[in-house]
Image (cartoon, rainbow, N blue to C red; front, side, top):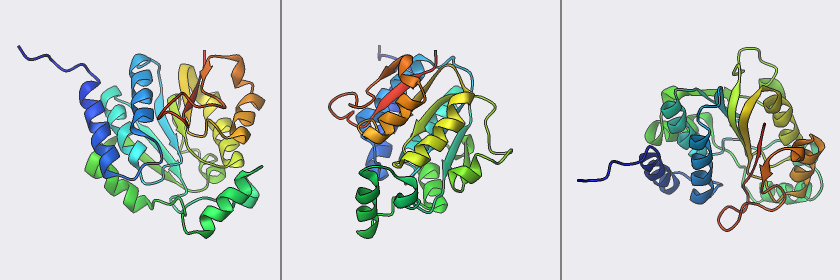
Length: 222
């Protein structure tokens, strides 16, 4: 008899397909680590939130998770690229991201491009795309999930990260997990500490989670 696939087997294969088809800032191993943790905690109530969408690779992956869990994925992004690093960044971020923008890497995925990638690889119907700068989007009364089970933040700059924390953490359900893709950025680690999140369960803040998981960390709300 053929072995019946475990519930995550097909998702892992689809994550790998997305990784090959969409330009991603994260590694496949990072997304599979997230997949495992979310499925392990799948009973936590609330929707999924992604802040910082880029080309929509993680969006496509999380849209499949949202469909599996019967949730909605809220995807927040300007869809026009990064804001001004001089205003939103701190420490070495300012010069580093200014130089990257000057070289032409805008960190931009247009809403049309992201929707196309999700339509091709994920589940578009599970997504709600919220376009705008975080400080504007988070003020919109119609753009909020009632509760958040899991959130993924990949926003690069300190002020953007702070705005996301202020929005996500109060809405995160008990048992929910906040993932960050800036694990080794000392400015981001300092923000996590400033919010008092290191008093609870966490992994990888300031260091990453290991080989091919270099930029991933997470904090659980217990």
